[in-house]
Image (cartoon, rainbow, N blue to C red):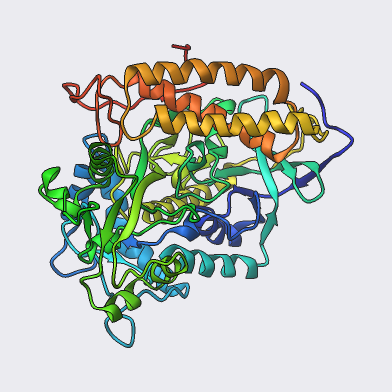
Length: 536
């Protein structure tokens, strides 16, 4: 390896949080009274998947609802792969985290003036109205409140444009910080810490079409894998059924809450088609809805399907979905009078870094939370609006575990840590190659590892990714450049995704393989890979 001594900065903290999304902020706020927290945000702190979440947070609050109902709905959506103990833990913690958000200043939509009677909505796969929300921009509101509190806390340091590159392990294999890249000053930064939380979000940018923000490149998953942590179930990339289809619109999600409020999926002829695929119709779980839209598009040859909420009164639409209405109007679509053109897009990763119920990974001193982690909550398909909930619950559980064991955590002792990256800027011709591989990986994943898969397509994807990985290792692994670092990560996450998709000899939840259309008999199994796993 090549040492960066000489132009690498060093800094210490008690608790390192890699990622500035909801899980990272909630954890930081809970740890701030126990030591110095450093939040490393790869770009600007508000840029996260969390702040783009529209629908809301699922919690049993309504009188007719129950924990057992929420658990059952989550297990059904997860297609037999959820860990029931995890599901129950999260579901039963939900009302408490909602109360804490209210205490922190989040004002959810309510039916009464004092805000005590929440205006609950319903989404696909839910038996009851149990989604608390802030109109159609819940994630933005919740994230903004927590970010405001974090910025105001004297023990929390938010370092924007500090890109986590690789974890630093001591000789005993304990995580003691990270190698980072200061994008502003184009320098390496070694951060040493008593413990580290990976909260870098998902990996939607591995696919050509996604609802995710531009930085969702699976960084935390790649970092954890390179450090030796097990990674599970990456084949379960959830494709959101309804993203806006327009040549000038990218990454804009149409919330599932529209279907929860009576929106109907229709084809170009105006026919509601979902009852042909599932008895719940447009309220079927996301994996079924996404596959059904995909099948309908292939059958009709149409470039998109449509989501129609226009039968609702215009003032109802304006009140419940103001951001969606405003955005669609910018593209000449009046959702109060006409249906919204939609297509599926990569949205949420149900797999990730394997953790226990306290967010601990297999690496001492390393925790993971949010979309980066695989906790067992989502199984083979995430139930709508369980994601922000998972962020909050596991941030809380991880913080409590760290606080309980704080006295036993060694203080960070900087070591001479070697980097595997060089600090020169890539020349233009190398940037062209990097951009080409970026595009090739994302198109390859969309076309070969998309909503419907086959053995032939998966094998072809694996062969091509092997070539790309070898080229990155030979020519671009040593480049300290944002595009090269992200390329290294998406290539690795794509490869792991394909390998785990090949390992699963069945169709379950989000993962649908035409060569294995049935479920395997017996209990569902996770697909797990670590750095020591043999190649296929």
